[in-house]
Length: 113
Image (cartoon, rainbow, N blue to C red):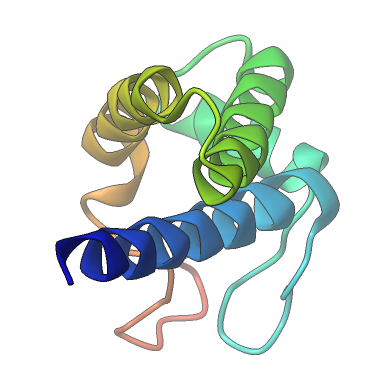
C-alpha cells in the first residue's frame, strides 16, 4: 500500500512539474488565468525579479521543471531530479513567485503574472 501511495505522489508531482515547465518553455496554458507563457515572457519576468540574464535562466528553469517532471514520472534519477528541481524552485519562489502566488493569479489582478 505504501508503494501505491508513493507512486501517486510521484505522479502528481510530475504532472505539476511538467505543467510548469511546459508553460515556461512553450507557453502551454497561456491565457485562462495563467498569464502569458513562453521563454520570452519568462525571461522578462525573471529579469524584472533580478535574475539576470533572464533568457538563459528561463531556459534552465523550464528545462529543469519539464525534464525533471518527466524523470520523476518515469522513476529515473528521482532523487537527483528532485533535489535539482527543489533547489531551483526554491530560488524562483523566493525571488519571483512569492509575492504573486503559486501557479495562478489568485487575486485576479491583470498586472500580475
